[in-house]
Image (cartoon, rainbow, N blue to C red):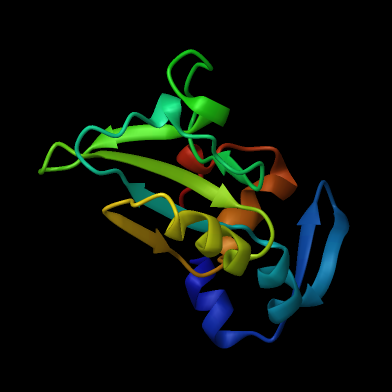
Length: 130
């Protein structure tokens, strides 16, 4: 898996159609990867009424009428909406914005090759499996 590559290697070459499309350190590649963000809204908060930062993009496919800025929403056991995004850019500026939103919870995952790798092959992360 790519998590094993991350732990065992310090340099990676990505080959597509017989050509090296990326040749870099794991650290640099992870810096290119977006962070995964899960935002749990408070009861009564509507994701369609939140002005989401432009640094967020959806991690799944939804129609524009369902959510703002293509946010992905699911329901947790507590029935609070959870919006899933990829963060492009600084997590510090996102956290500063999120602090004023009064969300129930915000989880920011580390950058991962699992997110970045499929983009070199124009494949959905949903179909990516080892």
